[in-house]
Image (tube, rainbow, N blue to C red):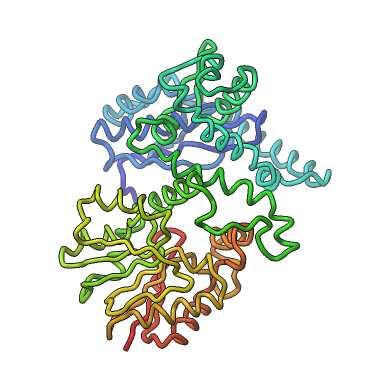
Length: 453
């Protein structure tokens, strides 16, 4: 069966530093340009590209195999890609100068590399050395910390269109020697490019980390930098059973609040359309957004239903941030903000929908039971409570992201955690809600929905 005229397998194997592999020789760039060239030449429906593991020719990468002919190419550079696409895929003539033409030699090299790989694996196993992937996890904090420091210093904006470490240090108010060390590490990680002593932003950094880009995520990612300090106390939190340094949300300062709400707004902007579709708009005229933060979900619901009005309940420190987003969306006349404490305040009445998004993980089980009872009281007959949160499987070991995020709540709250579908169902039913159901959404979070009879 040949669903495509050509099927290209490109090795993108990543191996430990110093070990020959296609990844170290630029296979990622080859893949990027190959896909771009195929699309630009209108061949996307004829040529299927698949990244794969080792093809066994590690010393001669990047390597690719083209079927149905079974043409093997080695030492393919980014500069070769356009010629391969034109000659092989458009004109049907394989590019001879990069072809491997001796099957016996090819087979011998692949088998030889396989035997060396198995021998190295046996030697590592016998030595008792840590598996490489496990060791990479253990030291992963190093790359994370380097990126977070660069974001805190606004380094990618300082780099701009290109700069020396000395000039960047003057902009950032940092030490020139230390700045060059940081920039060298960021270059090794592929986030900067260094040419003749001048550093430039890599495309991904220019898009997501530098001021002026429409996709600049730095304001939201600064929340991760704030979390770093809390995670450094994880050992003490496990001993204590709670956060080591506890602060109420409103006492954490404007820098913390701005970064937190920016992070929540960025996440919500991506997820809100999925939530609106999953919840539906039938019968929803009044909505209460409990702990609504930036207002992203209220805005999404209001934009999807011109007859809907929403009210956001959140702390006074959040109100001006939410108001800016509401005004930018032109919805000041349909979305109101009420300041208050979701842990204790009466929530009102007569709402068709009460949304509780990214709130329950901050609270204890007892606080969630109380909150959901007040949410039920705020509903009109037939109204619904919708919880959006990370929902753990019954044994609480999956999804992995949700299990890890529970630790984030351990180091940052008094008694917060992530909870299972079983727990959410119990709390919703105990609050007097019926037709309780779980809705799975793309991404790490899901919905729990219950209705007032």
